[in-house]
Structure formats: C-alpha cells, structure tokens
Length: 308
Image (cartoon, rainbow, N blue to C red):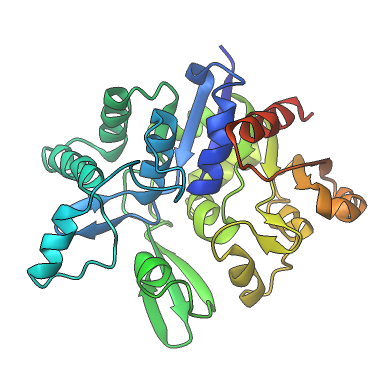
C-alpha cells in the first residue's frame, strides 16, 4: 500500500488533512507533527500541534477556534486562577485529560511517539500521527535582546514582538522518531501542509536526518502555500517572514522550500506569481486554497493528490 506522508503544523494543516482522509484511505496517511511548540504547564506535557491534528481527525476539535475540544469547559483553569496560578494558556477540562494521560504515559517510560499512537487509537484516529522526534526540540523566539519560549511569544504576548531570529534548541542532536525517515523515503507523495514555514515546518527541517530524507526521497513533494495575497490566513507567518528578510508571498514560500520541492499549490489571487515560481524549477497549480468548510478541504486535498 503506497504511503502519503504529510509534514504538519497546527490549524492550517489540520484543515487540509481533514479533507485528505476523505480522499485517500486514512491508513495510507502518515502525518509527521511539529513538536517544537511542546511545553510543560502545571507539570503536564502539552503538545499543541499534535493535539490540534489529533482532535481534528477525531472529529472533536472546536471548529470555531481550530484548536481545543468542542464544547469544553474551563472549571479547572478557573480554580487554578483562584489559587494564584497563571492561566494565560487556555486549557479546557477535556483538553487537560489528554495532557494528564500523556504525562502519565511519559512518566512510565513510554516514548512520545508511542503515547501519541495510544491516544490516537483511543480517540478513533485511523491515520498514523507521529511526532517529528522523541527528543526535546524547543522553538525559541528572539526579539532583539528578548529570548522567549514559543508559547510565551505566541499565546501570552500574542505574537506582538518583532521576531529577529528563531532558534530550534536541541534540533542538531535530535533523532527522528521511529517511522519518520521511512515514511519520507518510502512515500509516493510528500505533502508540506499550509503551515507556518518558520514556526511549524522549520523545526522539522532543522533535524538533520529529516532534512536529508526530504532531499533524498523519490517521492513527489507538494506544498500548499499558507501565504495568500501577501498575508497569512492565520497566525504570524507573514510578519515573521518579513522580519527575517523573506519575501511574503507564495513565491517566498516556494523559494524557502526550493531545495526539495517539486510542486506548489497557490491561491487564485496569486496566479500572477506562477511564471516566476516556475522559473526556479517548481511546478505550480493555481486553485482556491482557502478552506472554510469540509467540502473546501476535500476539494483542496483532491488538487494536492492530483498534482504531478
């Protein structure tokens, strides 16, 4: 059975993958999730991107926010606030149950990839979701003289700091989780989801063996641009690309991935960039890439799978 392997961050990736599992059998899909955002709160190990993907594929995500569990309550967080704890990281009660379970398994000596597999099975997720590594890789945001943990920058400070550099602590020594390299090398198609190139995809690319596998694989590699009309659909990707001297455009995304990318899907509003991208040796498909419904997600997933 031929594999399709996806590199995925959070909300944008989840929307595409939600459509993809309606286009191909989910058992054919391996999703490599970013763990550079992982953080510890209240003694619990939290994997925000893995959870967004898992909740979405399990059909329990809060569709309005794109993260968290639908219909969740926040009684525990409210009580923690009354007890004097910081509560800027909004963890719902059902969400906390996942983090408690993950931390319990990890404390028993089970690896993050094994824990992720267990949680997915128990939530009915049929696609194979694997973390990029079982080692600790931490995305750090540098803003002038400030050195910020990712979630402090992203959630607490609401991405208001100007990003001058991004560092992936531990990536140089990190080993890919089991299955990751094989899933890239043996895939028929590799999909770079419409995730933030710097904050969501680069943590994976910063692990030497993952980067090497992407350059070595015979798979056809297709990306969906998260930049539409010069702006990010969600999150600070556009501002970060600009502050780091990258062109904020579909072309800028294609150039960022050019070392391994075969094909990019860009939005209709960016069709004027098609020839420019093709000039750097990357094929282009122009389509409606904005996913507001399941039907939109399925439509875009079909376009991605038909890219050749």
